[in-house]
Image (tube, rainbow, N blue to C red; front, side, top):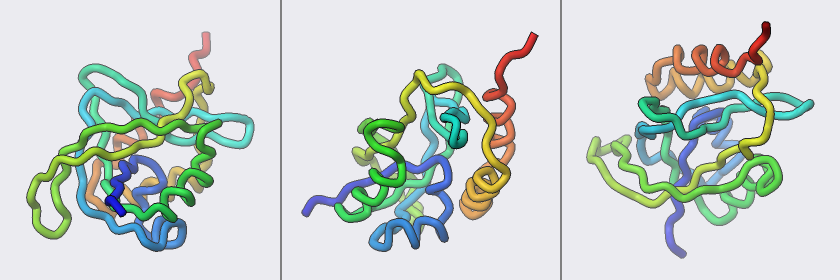
Length: 154
């Protein structure tokens, strides 16, 4: 079976969480998605991270190798196809063990754009922050996403 690669930018960069959610998955590297920005959006049940195109912006991501079983678990967790949809993106990632840069087709979950902006729970934000710290990503990116996701008030 061909290998599948998954791009994570939210709670699924949390390695401990992914061990439970996707037992076959292994992190293969990190990358930066250029031309994308992080936002919190959602529904009445909560707001979660998504990415949207934005010129001049970038998003740090973890790249995972996943099994078919893992992908099915992720589909269920992400509410695919109703809450998030999948998009294939070519990503150049730096290998965790070798440091070599490799280019792969990978899928990413993107929340449907018509979902409203919102604020994340403290719990969800902390889960994401632990992943950011693990990969030495700038946690200020999450704080900026919280700020960027505030509803405009007059």
